[in-house]
Image 1 (cartoon, helix red, strand yellow):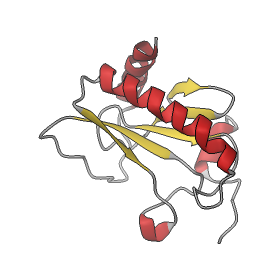
Image 2 (cartoon, helix red, strand yellow):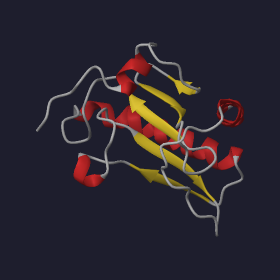
Image 3 (cartoon, rainbow, N blue to C red):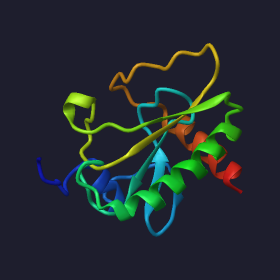
Image 4 (cartoon, rainbow, N blue to C red):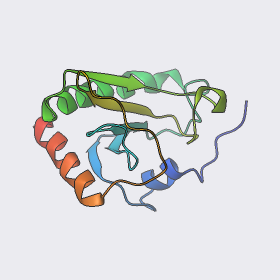
Length: 140
């Protein structure tokens, strides 16, 4: 297994070296808007503890991580009037992982609406900021 690289983009976001549209933060996780969203309200939830992915993570992080994912999934569903929520998590390149810091995707879903492709094109930051505010409002 490859080792954790502390220069990955999510580690830089956690250290405040790269900006993000923050939605939620506690002692264990940070959640922010995906800059290439596949659906409106697409969030990323990352543990603060360094781990490449689920395969090398300390099992102690999963409780706080999944509790935050659940909390954010409920808020995103409410904020976007979604019919459901898709939770995705990838491990290693063969499974689709492109950023090698453990992270969970939270995507509000509406019946009949296809996911947008992960095109590599960044979304408008004003839209992402508005979506982050909508989810923060739903969190209360």
